[in-house]
Length: 305
Image (cartoon, rainbow, N blue to C red):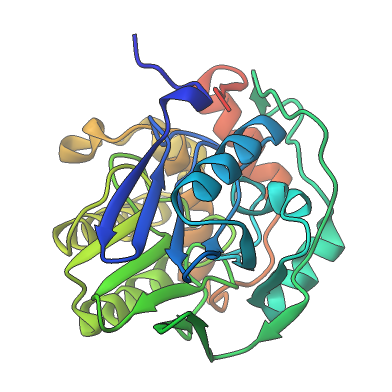
């Protein structure tokens, strides 16, 4: 059996002073984080979904580098932000829409959608410092460029953390390695455009939001999956099928090896909307989309966070 417990997480050196905190198996609400050594303290990139997982993360960062003095959020989703409140004394940086969305939605536990979570005690803590396009942060001498890709993608407020000297990219959920990308709260078309930003950076190593560290080859897999979603939506819409009906009729082919296959339904809801003229990141009926995901899955989705 796969060990998905917090104890299975590991610190991986990505370059001098740059680390990934990788949590197997990268499924729902089991994310990766990153941190950069700043000579006795650390710049942390994202927290975890649960109290227990975030406490384990902070212990690992402290043992490797030192206390966290700056925290960057790559987007608003709870698996990357729920633990913000445990990073006492650190300034929290995020996109302007990350702060706005977190304040509007609060902590999301997705009751009835996900089951099996061990949330612990959670408190909302939103970014203190916000930006719109780019912002540069330093971890000691190490430069970290925070980049909004210019399009709604996984969400409306994705942030890349790029170390230009080390050529290390903390991609957040713009890259999934082993799991199905999820565009319901962002844009299928916009995500494909945003991937060109990653290609232009030409990183030597990428820490995805979920799954093992990788290279640009996984960007191509994400892009191919999103193109598959677009073509599948075109077929379903032309045939007069609903997103759920089209998902049930679809052979995933090469993408059947990806986990979280139920995400296809949510992705089709977004792709259908974009075929109908919706702008990237436009509001959708998320309840309807998630209800269809549960119908495809045959009930609530098992979560191991």
